[in-house]
Amino acid sequence: MGSSKGLLLLLALGPMILIMLSFYQWDRIWEKRAERLRRRQELRKQLLRNMCDQEEFSKGKHSLEDISDKQLEHLIVDDKHGIIYCYVPKVACTNWKKVFLVLKQGQPYQDPMSIPSEVVHNKNKYTFLKGFPRPEVKAKLKRYTKFLYVRDPFVRLISAYRDKFQKENQVFYRLYGQKILRTYANQSNPAKTVHEAFASGMHISFYNFIQYLLDPRTPPFDEHWRQFNSLCHPCLIKYDFIGHQETFQEDGEQLLKMLSLENHIRLPPAYENMTSLNSVLDLFGTVPLEDRRKLYKLYEEDFRLFGYRKPVELLDG
Image (spheres, rainbow, N blue to C red):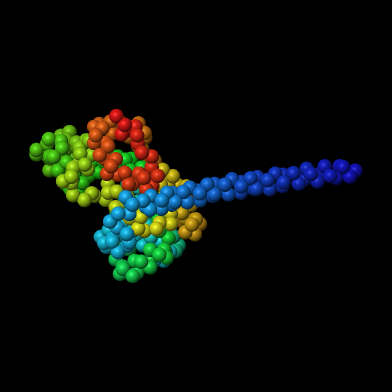
């Protein structure tokens, strides 16, 4: 009789035990995931600190006093939540700018995806660190949570080229395209508009773009291809979080949790990375080996500071 009651009790409690085990296993999975992400973040920051301690990265600038206000123009501030974000064009910056606009508007937080692109690209909508007196700049950099996002430097160059020169972008055609065509594509009289240029089959090749970057006569780089190190000064500003485009979603969720915003804001999904290894090899295959090596030298600090693999397949003869 007792064994029958025991069997009935086991049958009754069985589903509950299974549910409890499932919850336990699920919690363990999430704990392991959180630990993996925490460790990855610590490794990124430790690598950056180690690289910045090397003389070659610390030469010339030793403190915040060595940075001009102009050089702080990429750091966006949210005083309400105590956050500073150094945005890097072509590295998920549209998504994070949307988050900052939502935070600025306050609760109830709206969906960042609902913010139109013309608002996102209006710099007047943001508060920049450069607008504060130096004592406040120092105080905010000390107290606030600071983060940036980076990506493979060569892949970022491809993204910038595709966005600014493979599409009909009149602004970039006027600022850079006509000069690139004249100087590197033997077009002595390029079309006045990008639409006319495209219609006549006049295109800037990827190699033309690289020639422009390598030319010592080229003025300071546009922000879309300026080096991370130059935009965000990671050896002078101690960042609390380093996100990578390649792990955008995981990093974004981890950062929102770190900021205690995970239950309030849904991070816009990253655009699918259309730059495969094959397309990297194909595009850089149009660039002579010596120029590829010179280009790597231009962006070597970004590769090394943020742990990106040296692209030996592009640099070895």
